[in-house]
Amino acid sequence: MNPWETAAAQLREQRTAPSSAPRSEAGGETPAPWVTVEERSGSAFARRFGRGVLWTLVAAFALLGAKSVLIPKKTPAPVQSTAPAQAGPAYPNDEAQAVAGRFARVYLAWDEKTPESRAAALAAVLPEGADTKMGWDAKGKQDVLAVQPGAVTSAPQQQARVRVDVLVRPAGPTTPAKPGAAAAPVLPAHWIGLDVPVVKAGGRVVVTGPPGLVGVPTTGPKAPEIAGPEADAAFGEQTAETVTKFFTAYAAGDTEAVTAPGASVPPLPASVSLAAVTSWTADKGSGTDRTGTARVTWQLGGAQLEQTYRVQLTRVASADAQRWQVAAVHGGTA
Image 1 (cartoon, rainbow, N blue to C red):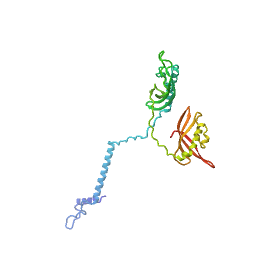
Image 2: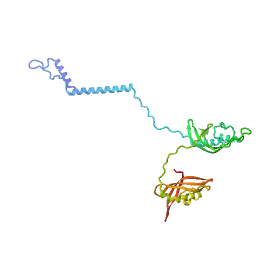
Image 3: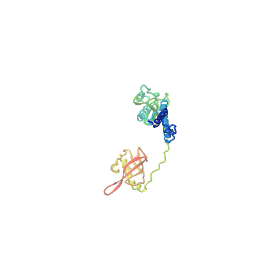
């Protein structure tokens, strides 16, 4: 029990029983055994402060609970994956070039005496029910000598455009346009460009319709300036005879005796003979493998033709000697 409450109860009992209450020597009432003093100690302040903090926390938690009910927490949106989308299958460029090349060979070759053969060949690379005349008026004669498929430009809906260069030799009409009129002059063989539209359908590529004739460039772009390797004049003089012997044997059909062990250099056709090794320049370097550039003039087809080769030499050693032999040869300067 609280001692303060017990003392207060005893005081009340004494005041309600005057006959038994003790008195002082002067005849007055005995003073109270304790005196009420206002509490001002630090412990009281600490208790009040603690109660205040406690009620503050209770109020804060109550507000947070009310907020969670009235304002629900937003669920964050799912993070989209940054991984690239799976790419679809690439356009069948090889098949498109093959189909376009086959079409171009038939499309630009015709003979008014046998129009049905052209129509039958075109039907194999056209959609079912397509017009196999493809705009031809069934006159004249033209031969195709060569076909070179080129770039494939893809388009929406599995379509593409294939560039094809065709070497044709016109023969002109077999009969004059009018009785008694002279036949039209026949042009020499020349290249024609063709843009062929194709589409992938039913698991294969077919030509979708008539192509378009396009021009063929008469010249190429300007080539960049490429610096050649530094020359080794002394080594060039030392190996000039070796290179000349190789090209002589190259044209004669017997390269085994002039090539290094393990080298494979097939000989040239019998119709080619060596006119001269015009020049031989060895690259600066060191070691057992060296490279240089040779300019060679060949005799073929009743004419002379000068060409350029890159020749790789290797040093072959035996028990009592060593020499340089050709290990590989490539046309051009690259």
